[in-house]
Length: 437
Image 1 (cartoon, helix red, strand yellow):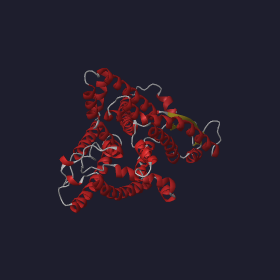
Image 2 (cartoon, rainbow, N blue to C red):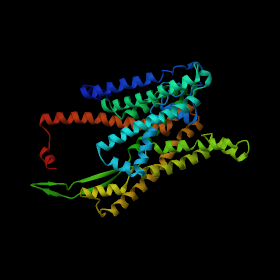
Image 3 (cartoon, helix red, strand yellow):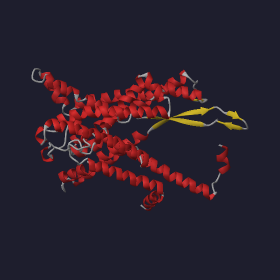
Image 4 (cartoon, helix red, strand yellow):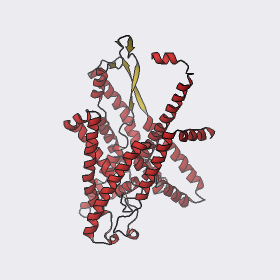
């Protein structure tokens, strides 16, 4: 406990780190306050309450702003959609591939295109949102006036959230967009925890403790999945420049076991609503269609979870393939005089890296599928619906990933401060050997 208190004291003793943390908290407070500001012309008492299905997933990411008909009702989802589209175009279209290789200027162009695309996606999604998610009885003004003004407000709200995310990245701690999604997810955790305690009562206190212990081990497993890497050794040839020798060092390529992150779950979850939607069109005419619709509308059915798990495995391989290019890695290594010991540079290196990726992606994808369907098993085991969502799935993966990234940034500030202090003292052991290396 003393070490923890000392670490907190050290964090706030660093002026820059203290300012970044306070800036982050201030921006997050602004985001949460905006989530409760209802669109003009809406009667909050006539809203339907929390959404379900894919809309419920969006509502979880946005901290209830979706079901509240808030000015931040669409949140960062249009920006994420635009980012995914640009990422896929970067893989498939040579123009965007060339732009990505231009360095900082190319990234600025891609970011600008992403922002413009976000505006168009927001306009389209806001129209669908206002039509499907806001009940007609809750609108107290003219329908046409409400649609026009609300589309403008929702678009402005998404642009403002994008700006908040960029400010957090620039002046705060962590990735801004990811931080906003995480705070939306965490905001629903206290309510889910209180609901679970109330439901169990004193008679179910032991069962509640078991649930907390199980959740603890699930979080540990997700942390292990997020952090697990396969380090591929890379040797760099020695080069003599003037009187100095450069290179000759062994480094590593860290290939993550779960390189795809949460994207396979998001893609698979989007597709899982299609069977029930399509079957509903012929439910009155066919018993098979009615059976398919009822089966895939229930996320607790074994058919739903089996198909969901298979889709996650397939999408994990697909997304890993489009985000990690073994050929490009091999070319970059060859250009910089690096090679994998025992493997010839060029094509053989590319094939070697591709083989390793395949071997580590398979168990990673299976484990990711298990994590995705854990909330269903938790619900079947008797955990409350709201609380069960934190036993796995997209929510837990996002929270763990963002928290780990933020902690690593804070740790880097602490190590950097500690390193500067050692340099000023002039009492570093083995300093000459470090300089030679």
